[in-house]
Image 1 (cartoon, helix red, strand yellow):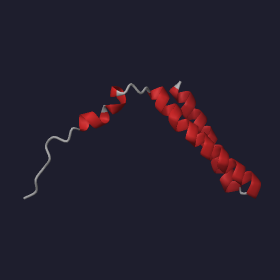
Image 2 (cartoon, helix red, strand yellow):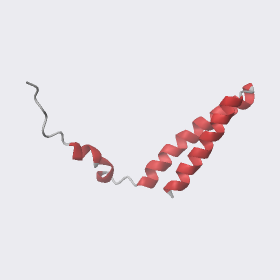
Image 3 (cartoon, one colour):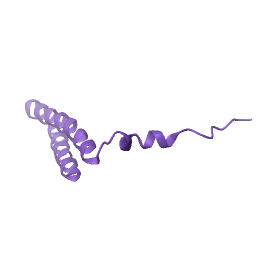
Image 4 (cartoon, one colour):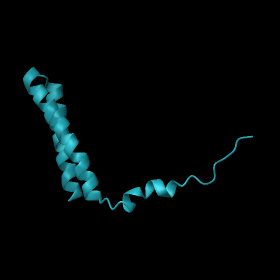
Length: 73
């Protein structure tokens, strides 16, 4: 017969952002910065190698990074 775990302490896992005082603005900006770097590198790669797909993904990534950044403000 399987044993079920009754108390997983999930509230501690999900409330860790509130415990450490991380605001949603800080979390969103920390996501937008690496996305903009990767997107810029993809755009640069697409421009240097004449790859339309890489450049397109880079442009979409930069637009998404800007949208995430403005959404957090």
